[in-house]
Image (cartoon, rainbow, N blue to C red):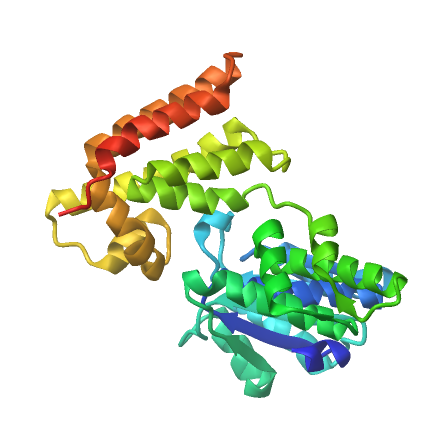
Amino acid sequence: MSRGWDRPYPVMVLTGNDDFMRDRELSRARRAAGVTGRRFVSVPEGDGEALRAILSASFLVSDPCIAVLESGLPRRRGQTGSWTDADADLVLEHHAADDAADVALVVSHAGAVPDDGFVRRVVDGVGKRRVLSWTAPKPWEGRDAAAKFLRSEVSRLGCTISEEDAVLAVRVAGTDRWLMTQEALKYVTLARVDGRETVARADVLSLAAPFASEYREDLVAAVAAGNQAGVVRALASARGGGDGDTPVSACGHLARTLSKWIHVAAIMESRDKVSDEDIAGRVGVNVYVMRNNMVEPARRWGVRRLTRLLKDVAGVERGVKQGRINPWVMLEAALLRHCRSASVAPR
């Protein structure tokens, strides 16, 4: 990808099949924008007016930027429209004019290049040599992939970090690639001040910014398995980590997750012949995520127990907003009570 930012192209097309791809490469676009004095501008799918404004001569002269045109991302991210053929023609005109001395324009797509439509028209127009594709790691490989990315960022800045310390940094700070670039810069800066070329474990422990939602993965996994001990550990991390998270945000995250499980469980219990792709589409997730992260808890809990749990979680959130004391204890008690009945493995 570095060749694209070292020598900006009028148009580059970025494709991939998961948030990992976009996080990894768009973080580089953000970094390139900062290094070269440009703005980083993200345009939602179908916003043709914004596209025309960005590609106008007056905008480019006054505010050079790296623009990212989002295409094919999940609708839950807020997209309300689709790119048109006219929008594709506008991008290709910009490419043909070769006037991108101050602009690198990226079209991102959540998957492989489709057979037709906006992205296909752009790809055919700019050529395959300007198309970069990435395959996402499996969910259980996410932290390892983030740690590898952090090590590459530290190396790019002229230092080294051990694999163990990179894994520690990810566990503390989360897996977001843009955040990893910021963490790497902090570690390397401190190491150089001390005259070192290696990032030490102490640097990670003293500088890593705790990621408020990191514990939620463990909490959801514990609830999915009916694991009471896991619930206690995850909530202890939330209360004692000093990351600024609140019972309201924890309840909100759980409620969104439980709602999806209920949807999957209801479809499974209806005995209707619905394909995995259709279920994933209704829930608004990737098929792989649905099969590996939602089917098991949906089967384990069932609609009735999930509904009761969701009501109790909502009750905890309501209690927090009404000023009741010990909200973390209320949430923990509710989860433990329900997880006790869900601890038996699904049939």
